[in-house]
Image 1 (cartoon, rainbow, N blue to C red):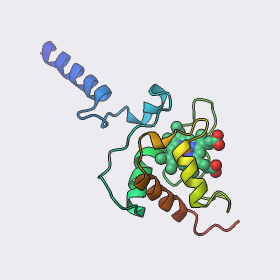
Image 2 (cartoon, protein in one colour; image 1 turned 60 degrees about the vertical axis):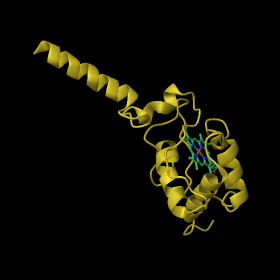
Image 3 (tube, rainbow, N blue to C red; image 1 turned 90 degrees about the horizontal axis):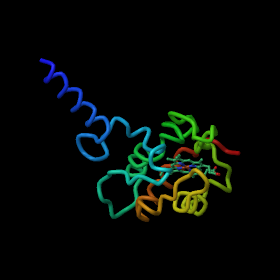
Image 4 (cartoon, helix red, strand yellow; image 1 turned 90 degrees about the vertical axis):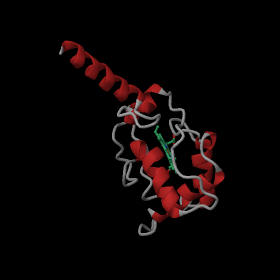
Length: 140
Ligand code: HEC
């Protein structure tokens, strides 16, 4: 009985840390703390054309932990510095441009990871489409 219990605990622990498949660990939300803010490649289908739908998928996997599920900057936790990631749902007109967003996502800045290390052009362009759709109502 004890042996069985022990095996279950060990297996559950391994699953929690490693995940049944790479990338599915329950500790995923904390990966930013372990990985020194290196971007983690989000697992999404290969795409040859940018699309809003792909952008949304990528956003959920790669961005919402810091920028919040709604893009309002209310991520699941603050950054190690105690700051919050900025809201992305009311960008100023100069920020709400494909050029600014593409550069920001690709190159990163401070705690914002340099996503061109793991995302291709189609994926970044899809994210830009998605972010711009979060900014259609607000006119500043
Ligand atoms: C580890 C947390 C973190 C993750 C994950 C993250 N960001 Fe950021 N992001 C930041 C921080 C912090 C800033 C502010 C950088 C600065 O100005 O110093 C930022 C800034 C930005 C900006 C510029 C906003 C502005 O008003 O200047 C955009 C656009 C952005 N992120 C998009 C994304 C996208 C798209 C993803 C997913 C691919 C993403 N971020 C993932 C932390 C994060």
